[in-house]
Amino acid sequence: MSEQNTSAIAGPVLIIGSGLLGASVGLGLRAQGAKVFVSDVSPTVEAVAQDIGAGISVRAEAARHGSSETQPAKVLTEQPQLVVVAAPPDVTAALVIEALEDFPEATVIDIASVKGPILHEVLASGVDASRYVGTHPMAGRERSGPVAARGELFTSRPFVICRHDAARAESVRLAQTLGVELGSTITYLSVEEHDRSVALISHVPQVMSSLLASRLQETPLYALGLAGQGLRDTVRIAASDPGLWIQILSANAEPVVQTLYGVRDDLERLIATLENPTAPGARLDIAQLMSEGNAGVARIPGKHGGSPTAFAHLTVLVDDTPGQIARLLHEIGELGVNLEDLRLEHSPGQPVGMAELAVNPNEHDKLVQDLTSAGWKVVR
Image 1 (cartoon, rainbow, N blue to C red):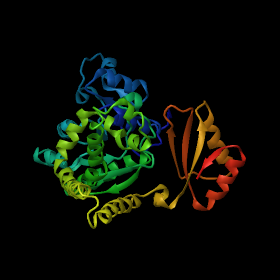
Image 2 (tube, one colour):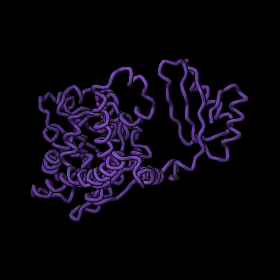
Image 3 (cartoon, rainbow, N blue to C red):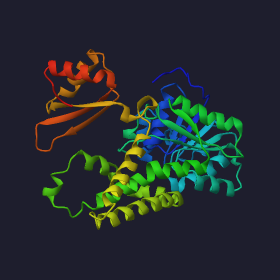
C-alpha cells in the first residue's frame, strides 16, 4: 500500500458494509494512500476487510482505545469527510439516515443497485438530505465477501450518480471524485432513469436466467450432458444469491414489471406462432422475432464503444493442458494483433477447449494464416 496520500479525497473515509463492494472501494482508496475506516455488522467480515488492506476496522480502533464500542460515531475521533454505505438494499436507507445524523459534516453516499426507494425514504425522514448522493458503481463478481474484493474492480466501469434537487453541489462533486478515484467512467442519471435502466439491463436478465435454469431441475443428466456454451452463458447468473435478489426485485418491482410485460407479449406471440408453425405467415413471424433480437444485440456497445458485430471472429482449438491459453495469447501478442474479445469454451468429455477470438476484420485473414502456420488448429 502507498503511504503517501495521492487521493483527491482528503478523508478520512468511512465505509459501512465491508463485503465485496465496500471492501473493493476501500482497497481502491487505500492504494492511493487515503485513510479509510471499515465497519460491518459482522465482526468477522470487518476483520477480514482490515486484513486484506481495505481499511482500519472500527472495532480494532475501539480496542486500541480500550473501548468495546462498535458504532463508528462513538469510536472515530476524526470526523469522516465521506461516508460510503455499501450495504444490502433493504437496510441502506436506514444506514444512510443514521450516518447523516451521526456525522453532520460528512457527505454520505450509497452504492446500492436501486436508487428511487432509498432516496424517497431519506427525504421522508426529515434528516438533512442535502449531504446525501445516491450512486451505483456498475461492477461486481460472482463471488461475494471481502475475500473476493479487488481494488481495480471498478476500473473502466460505469459509476452512476443520481443527484437530486436538494443535494449540495460539493457533495455531488465529492461523489464524482470517488468515482474518478476508483477509475470509473461517470454517468449522471435521475433515480427514475437509473431504476428503469437497471431493470432492463440487469434485473430482468437475472429473472430470465433464473426462470430458464429452473426448467433444468428435472432434466435428465444425459440431456444436461449435451449442454453447450449457449445454455451455460444463459443460466450463468442464475447462481446468484436469492436473498439479495429478493431485496433488489422487491425494491425495483415497478420498472421490472413494465419490462416483463413486453417480454410476456413477445412470448405469447411466439407461443401462438409455434402452436401452428406451418400457418401462413408463421415462419415470417419467427424470423421477425429473431431479427428483432439481432437488432437489440447490435445496439449493445462493444469494446471502445463499437458494435461487437463489427468484429471478425475465429475459433482456435486448444489442448486442455497447463499453459496452452497463455501460449496462444503470447503468440497473438507477438504477431502484433489486438484482441477485441475472448471467450473460452470446453468441449464436455474431450481433452480440448475452444478459444473464440474477436479481432479487427482487417487482421482476421492474416491472423488465421499465421496461427495455422504456427501449428494451431483454427476454425473460421
